[in-house]
Picture 1: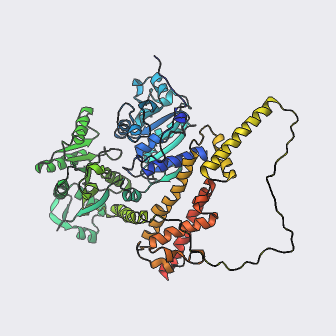
Picture 2: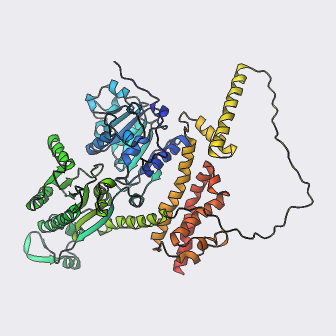
Length: 630
């Protein structure tokens, strides 16, 4: 029997996305931003989404094709671990697959057909039957005879989703997107920069910050611990007759910080100190909780990893190493030992840098010198995944801890996370501040000059009409009249549903008619736009300003800063803290610019408001700069 393939599956399905309490806000909002990019604005450029580790990136990828893709979807993973994670989460045959688990669909028969591309093992008939194809990037290389680039037509996929897109400098990524040149390309990543620090090609359509994820409890909070030895001596060129302190090496200019940190990384003594500290932290975490917390350690190479493993063994701590030289059988055993809690320490050598989902990794022990913030962030990301609330017994269960040696010189890399944690506290404060659109107190407007009495008054009564003359009523004319009646009915329904002006309803209808990817739920799209602007103000703009100028969010020190004059003079009298005053200022400014309260805004009004936000943010920064420099 031939496989059945429905090329319109993603357009005909009716997933529950908006107002689905089982989905996370960044999954819903990320989906609508991509929808807006390709369907509403009909852009052709690549769409970039930035989501921190642990927020639900795989789930977002599972939502993206619906009502956007008009055919098959290709999901590309940069390494085997990520590919297996994606397949494991989206496998329609598993009862706990993402769509069923999160109640996006209720019935398994509504799920897409998904396959993993395995080169020559995957025949064309199976490929043609799939709605979603998941592939590891290595399998796409054009030098391989089995590569889809050598066999499939350019229109075989309508959407390509690139996971961990900061790897997209690779030649294979470029070849793939060029071959399937008509496909909509979405790049999902934890950072907007590539491995070489260049920006990822495409339009950034949605970014959800780590601080937002922390504030909303999607990821663990973080603590950083640095082991500082009482005294540290270093020798040069194996000459043990002369020992130097770090201070002496710096003063004499003999060796630089990079040399010192690499030396410390390979020191048995220094490694033993970090091992001991990490075990103490693990033992404290395991007290009074059923949560099977674990340590994840990072080593520079396999040889160093084995040395560190022996140090843990000496303390009777079961430990496994994950590295690329393991056989498939050895890797399966290691992952099984981790999953089933047979080990307490996982030592990683360039294998679990991203995409590995095990929330019980709670302590990050660093035994290598990081210099680039990207691999550091990826490693710390391994302890960010939150443990389900129902499993936890204490707050500490969802606090990730980092331990490293002082002379690995990681302070600057930690500063990034430190700022994110501070920002998350501001966001938590503003989440309690629900009203962003209060009205000012009524006031006496005074008298106006009135109308010019020298001109006549003009008044219309009743409804006007348009008179048209048709030369010949043909079948096409009859069809047009029927279409006009149907259009008029749709316009009236949209007006009633969204409580909007006729012109706005017409624009929505015209946009949907111009593409087969019609806005099936304009009310939900509209509601998403409305919510998104509040999130931008409360979770991005205001926290950035408070941190940049070191402003106490709960004080009222900004009441005289110069922002709250004229139409804004009432804000400090109604709102009694700095965070709230700034948030309401932005909302009131936009209300004034659009000319209506937000309850009356159209979709176009929200687009205009977004365009104005960077301008008013820059203005507020200038006001605050002058205020604090005065």
